[in-house]
Image (cartoon, rainbow, N blue to C red; front, side):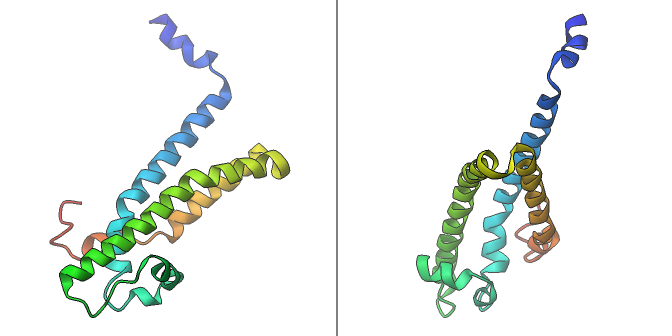
Length: 146
């Protein structure tokens, strides 16, 4: 029992920062991952509204646009296909941006500045993230367990 009480004092101070950073990063990633496709399918790519979203016409041009005139079943498949591809891009950027950030930290700015910049970017993303209530209440019968 004495070892457990003295172990945290023997750990480097940076380990606590690393643990907290990794915990927040994993929470951030999995929370966004869980909501991204649901939000895109039910709100962002809604019939007639998806053309108003910045950058969505470009992505739809590359991956295939959902047909607003198609029947519901066909359109839902098209929307899920586009949402899945955008989700793939999100996942790719999650794993590729640390390489870019590491390069910037090593060459130009330093480790501490880039850690602060990464934390600020994560916080800013959540400021612009859509309200969870909109996603859950868009179709209350579908999301009643969330």
